[in-house]
Image (cartoon, rainbow, N blue to C red; front, top):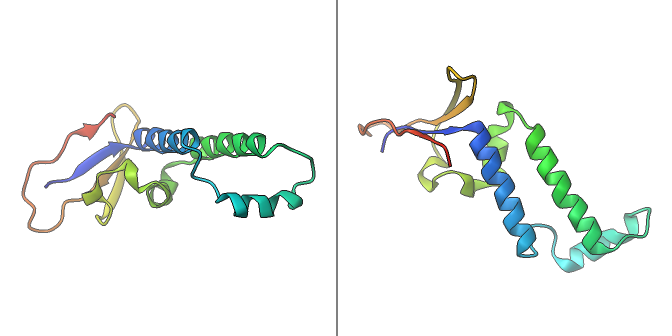
Length: 121
């Protein structure tokens, strides 16, 4: 397989979607007993569901703020946002003519297929 290219904003969107799936399934954040251990450290009385909602909203904001320099961390935290074969490839980044950051997962040596199109989804 050749190079695989994603728009950075597409990767961020996919990461936020994974956060949303975790939220819908009631997971992604600490296990219930771990979560309950944290509650005494909170200075205000708050319903655990409200606190989780705040955490999910904050996770979205953090992803929104990240720029291209955080692409490796984004993929480390959300490996499902790229194709599995991309996870151990060399990454390069560049800006296209429309000023979008592109993340290029380089093909391995001996892989002579044509370059993949930019992923929009």
